[in-house]
Image (cartoon, rainbow, N blue to C red; front, side, top):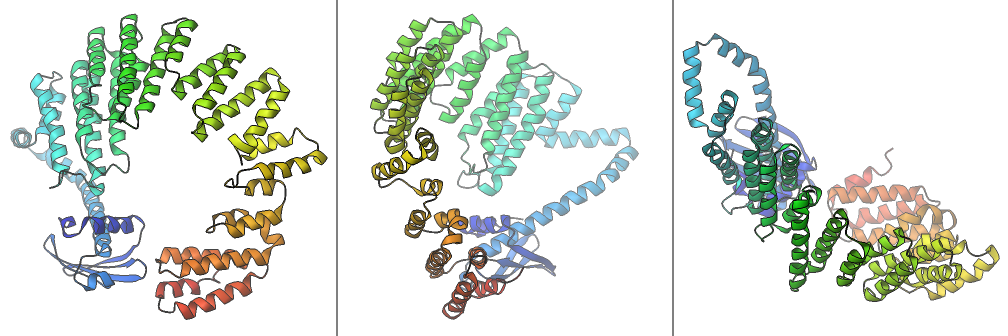
Length: 552
């Protein structure tokens, strides 16, 4: 059945969301079509008529469809109907399997052979499958046929705009996956290592050229399957194939593959090819990639790739047992990159070269002064080094710096500092901290820690939305029920100004139920509901959900 072209793209996507969310109910057959109910912001009735296997006309009670447009509710019903039809087909296949076996068993040999010849002439993939069962040899022509099978699958799913939609993506991925699991895996098991590598490479490269809605990560799954095949090859193949594989991997960092695909290959290169003849090549290759990334100043991701390839270069140096002096020199040559400094610092600590680690951490904090995340990480690490070497004064000073500046608002840092003071001392110390904390730092966790609930309440009252309120509701509702209910009332009334769908109304009712559990909540909730029934009486779905408020 072909019907998706009848809908605008965004309408089709919203219809598919409704289908996935289970909003379609009561699909029923009628003489030449189907009827169903779809839950949107209201309840809508949908009717679809067919002419044979094609959609003839459609009706929906929603406002959008009144102007003659095909709506998301119609699309949702068709997705639901299509799934039911597929399930029926599967049932038929399962029911007729024994019947097929019985008929084949009754047929004469020449009839079976003749029928099989005709089928295999018409179906290239089945021909290759059958040939593999009969003869385990694979010719160059066979590999080209397999590649055409890959092309055929891609072409079949690409639409008129050369794009594979979200709805078609899963079926496409599963077909490619089946080809890998059956054909490629069979080649591997039969020992056709070079052929296996060639076909796997072709599939891997093709996936980078397909324009697809890959929201579910199907392409990544296919690439992972290719990686698994490559790994199995490297664990079982001979030196000749291994050499070919190494050269293919090295030469495919030429921009012909997507960046994330190159990452897959990079991992293979690093995890395998440990022989001496490869290590020198890997060392040269990784350094070349570092320099390429440094020259690519127009790319926002250049820093990431410099760090990634420099780290791989260092891993190769370690595997080759290069001296610490050589490793330190390389790190210093790439000192502007935070990942290299992190590596250098960790090695210094590992080797108990604490003074070098402290110096590198202080340099890193200065170099990354405009990047709060890095400053926080390096500053925390510096604190830990001081603690490790027993420098109590420097440790305490660094912890203070973290609490009020480098990692302000972090409750764990706050608690660590608190342990350094007596209970009596801490009362004055915490007030000093509150004074020094930047104004934009969230203080809720600290106020909760100190049981300063009056200050916590002020934070909640001035916050936007319900997130902070709901996080601290249980604590505050005991002492400040009136204020908590007032905050809920303000936020709910603000949200209710705008029309929403049934799910949103259901969420509001759940919030009202939470309010009922707070002291004085029943009176407040009743007042909200009475006001809403007057103000929003025309919102049928909203009124229906409010009627369920007191249901258990």
